[in-house]
Image 1 (cartoon, rainbow over the protein chains, first blue to last red):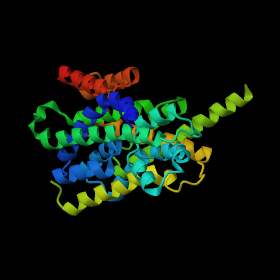
Image 2: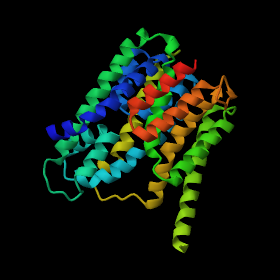
Image 3: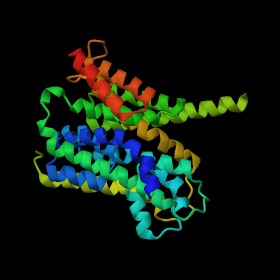
Length: 227
Length: 106
């Protein structure tokens, strides 16, 4: 457990400013301080939280915000599919706990260190140790943002920092050409659809992004097959 | 403050359910469920597409109008942030660099 905590500690440098920005952004989007703390603890997914806030400000319907959170969080479904064989021998409470606390950085560390058939019995403690460091760092920095955010002058336009934090989360997802093309298409459709009602534009952009990603992927496979 | 408190709570609880569901859907059953290859691709493209669809209008539009020029400080700062994120993979450098550029341009 200590080993996991130590291995993930350097990632706090990224988590702390991100959490503070999220904390400030939640309050300025209109959530009460209690709601912002609850969101931080219950949702514990910074990118989904930050993605939903502009929609909250624009008074989008609830289901659109749920859908957005779901789509942004879909990467965790992949992590879960990879992690399932590692954790299948654990008790149900353990699996609930480890599911709740999964974050990108610790997932990458853990999968990099252990294979799925690794017989070492304490690997889930490594996962828990790393995740707890991230969890504590996230909750602490969120609270600093929530309760001290009002001390920051409005002229700093800190809401822009929330957009920048999303850029920082987005870029590592752009792993290959198909994802990049899909993402660019989504951005273009989002611009073109800006005058549409918010829910339609966002969903159209996501659909276009997935479609273009799949198409580019097909094209690459076809070309590799011929060559 | 939001007009109605229940709306905020409904958002938070619903998002909590969604976030837990995406993380637990494969881990909790614990059986040998496998993700089909096509599903895995869709799951890879969707989050990047959603984040781009939120970020791009925020950078390239000013007061509801398209604004793609070097005179748009948010766009320039955003592009610098993209470059920093790609080069450093550091959230701190991305936020700090982008904010610095925005402040300097204003």
